[in-house]
Every structure is written in C-alpha cells, then in structure tokens.
Amino acid sequence: MKDKIYYYDRNGTLQLTLNEYPYYSEPRDLFDWTWGFNEQFGKINTFRRAKGTYDLLIGIAGEYSSRHNALCDIFSADVLANEPGYLLINGWKLPCYIIEAENTVVFDLSRQSRFTVRAINSTWIRENTTSYNGAPGGGSLGDDLGRDYTYEDGLMGRGYNYGYSQPESHYASIDLAGTNNGFEAIIYGPQVNPVIYLNNQPVQVNVTLTATQRLRIVSNGSVKTIEILEPNGSATDAFVYRDKENTPFLTLGQHTELTFGQVRFDFTTIERRSQPTWN
Image 1 (cartoon, rainbow, N blue to C red):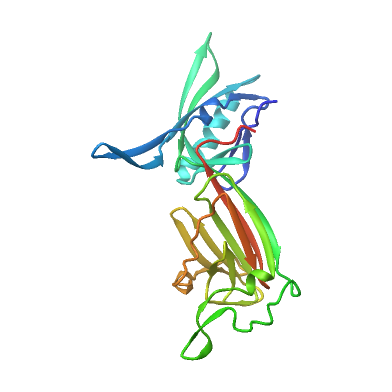
Image 2 (cartoon, rainbow, N blue to C red):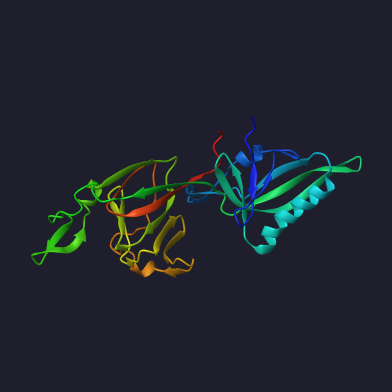
C-alpha cells in the first residue's frame, strides 16, 4: 500500500489526498535530500539542510479540466496569502509553497502536471503532543527542606533553584529520532513561576497565571517565544519574564527525561529530519 500524500492549506485544513482517486502521484522526489556547507581553508564546516525545491508529479483521472482548475486555485491561494501550506507523509510535514506547474499534453489531453514545491526551511517536521497532570500526592513537593536552594547570606531560599524535590514528583521519558529537536509547552493556570525540567535543566518563567490563563513556551530552532494566552485568544509577550540564569530555550536529543511537580501542561515535541520516514 502506497503512503498517502496529503496537502493542507495555510489554515491547516485538508485540501487534497494526492494519490487517491481522482488524483495519482509519486512521492519519490519528496524523499530526496541535500546538505549544504561552507568551506574555509580547505575544511568543510557549518552543515545545513539545503534542498529547497522538490518535483511533485500529479496525474488526474476522469474529468480533468475542473480538477486542474481546483489544483491551481488551492495552491495559488496560499501563495497569494503569503502563508505556506504543507505536505504530509507518514506523519511528517513539510511547510511549503507550490510555486510552478508544467503541464504535459498528449493527444490534446492534459491529464498530468509537474508541480514545483518550494520548502520553507528544507526540513520535514513531526509533532506529537502529550498532556500531563501534576496532581498533588505524586511526591514530596510540600516538604522542601532546603534541598532546592543554595545558601546565600545564611538565608535559605536565596540563590539558585536546583529543583531537587521537583523531579521526585512526576517523571516521563521522551525518545525521539535525531538531535536538536524543538518543543512547545503550554502550561495551564493557576500557577506562580511555573517550571518543568528537561534532563534536570529548568524551563521556568517568572509569572503569575490565573485559572483561565495559559503560558506558551516555544523553543523550535530560531523560533524562541514566550506568551501568556488569554481565554479570548489574545496573547501577551512574556519573553522578559524568562529565567535569565537558565535559558528555557533548550533542544531535545534522542532521549530526554521530563520531570515536574504540581503543574498541568501540554508538551509537544517537534522532530526534524531531512526526509520523512519510509513507514
């Protein structure tokens, strides 16, 4: 059974299944990849994913004229809006624009087009969201006993928060393919200075959330944002309230230990690959 190829528009709405009647397609070129690099004094360095364009061949069965029109309208709508859609294969998506079409005409019938896919950042991504509920009773959160802090000027509670008692409460293991993966965390209020730990490194923002507010932290390559989300959908920038001693903008490797206390949150892993997986 062939892998399904889906196209979602800029709003995340499924528009096309490109290898299901009346369309047929071949995804082989979408699995090609290229690494670019710099070269200085005879040494290669600064590798980066560099495949920017792909060929996507789409054939049309049956009555084809209106379906050609539909393909043009769907792909052009995202280009004209200057917002990418994305292709999806085996759970991996490639944010992209469809920027060119070449039609093949045989005996006055044009049932096949070769489209040019322009990737946004040459990287396929896969997202997976898990919800965690740090309900009371999972550990010794209430009894700090000074374990979380250094002593400065003879006073407990001043200095660096090492989080020793937090990890005792709740634990999860995250296993991913590759390295330098990103994440998005959405923490639900009420909370004061919420924190979770990735491999014992704190991801903390020093804010107070009401019961109806949420805190969104995104660490995904060059995208590094912190926002407070209101019930009406508006967002307030909270970047300035991040923990400045320990950056919350961490990356995820192949194995990550997630630990946390009494905090409810959704955690989305963002994996990156040069190609989608083959199954």
